[in-house]
Length: 427
Image (cartoon, rainbow, N blue to C red; front, side, top):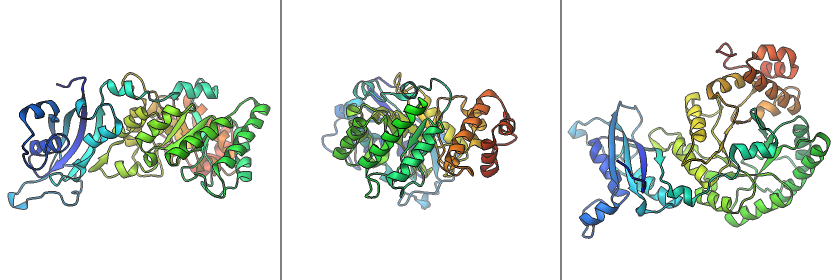
């Protein structure tokens, strides 16, 4: 039984030791214990502060490789065991503090010799975290209101080439995309404030150009400027964007940390587009790290209005099932709120729209196509048209072939990029 004053962490544990012994090693190391008994670890102190093993559910062997240096006593003939382990940590140990929470649930345990594999899968957080961290300011509804897009999938892109464009060329790219009716544009995560395109100059050019397009068309896409930097510069970068009339900032969550994101959230008046760059360090190895489900909860608490989840048939390592689980995680209510917009990216093209819609069953998505728009045979404007037509077909139940017969830009895109799920239901 858990209480409202506890954090419950769920782990995948792999070990050659008895599972209960390995679980107790985690609970002890991450709360009151160490490698040996100590004089002042009294029964009363343990009763109040020791982490508690709630359950140990043995699982089939995973086949994962062992972590280096793990205990393996071959003389005992014990095989490797796997389990889902739930451990409760008293909130009195660290309070509603993200960095100190991580010290408890994801600190030295990754280095324990008793573990051949250890992965933080999920976190159940008590109400005091909601009182400490307000989370997203805008989320899905606020982003839609700013864009005047009350329904339908939100379509966006990343400036390509990722780096190297001087501001005058960036102006032309932004103009073409905005006039094509795109909803969202962002800097690449590689673009900070380099000498060839300083942030201040980029902000001035982009906001001026978007203002001109809005005057002509009545629509202004959201542009997320990458303000990732040291804390003092990140705050100044946000203020620079806001003062120029910008409508969104982007932060690479892992590169600044959850505490820095929360710090910015407390000072920020613009939506925060949360990029997941470097998340693979935590998520890619199946026997080590922090699962996206747990990671995304922390990013949402810290204030990300948008959060990258990857997309179907992506160019990276994740399977469709893993991506769908990430999208579901971001859309699942947390502590009664924390509404965050899932951002699908990585190799997204028009041909993915029907399957993405079928398997997510929602249009509360921001779908970013970089190469899928900029690599269109007829240019970025046609790329936007193709993506819009594909998603319109997907949500209306029209096949891509039927839609492409009416929209040449979509046919060109399908010829160029293909349709990975052709022949599946709804396609």
